[in-house]
Amino acid sequence: MLATILGAATHDYADIMEKVWRFRHRQFVERLGWEACRRPDGREIDQFDGDEAVHLPLIVGGEVVGYSRLLPTLRPHLLSDVYPHLMDGGEWPRGERIFEWTRCIAEISNERIAGVPISHVLMTGVMEYCLVAGIRSLIVETHPKLVNLLLSTGWDVMPLAAPSMLDGALILPIVAKPSTAGLLKHHELYGITGSVLDFAFAPGNPFGTAPLVPLMFAQEPHGTHQYPRMAGE
Image 1: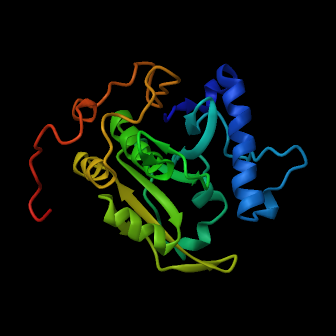
Image 2: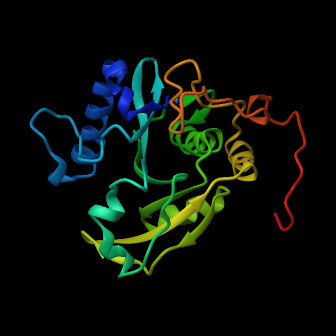
């Protein structure tokens, strides 16, 4: 399931992190062609993989099959240090509870977790982790296609600037906010039952040493409880 490894604790999970670096290289360099990130050791690591990063590897049978990374916006991150031109001189949200969502990818596979495609489990896990950890919003530089996916799966999305061309692709900077209603929509759309977070393995809390507390509704079997709807939903 989805583990949560804080950057400062990567040495405690060296075996999994080695698989993370190699998974990222396979996916982003070998599959997607990010040649600027190619390394002779087959490990994709950048300047933002420091102590403040939050790594979210999706682990099945001891292997990494999906991954996302969250970066605090009060520290250097991609939009601040690599892609500020996407904002065309404008500002973007920053704050202790605002993170940047990067490196999100699932391997191409027919493998499923409890009958659910791994890409759906990964996307659900990111929203669940934000709610559990207390992350209020994520900034993302992404393709319009993913923006449509986020909107259709319950994220509250707001554009931060007009789309720009980057390496031949249209990229849009956005802010995406998680919600309990959004997580419930993920569960309903994908037929997910229970939490997809692995609280027994690397339950990293970016705001302190207290253990993360599971969301009560995420523990209940799918379809066994009726939740109130928000107006207009």
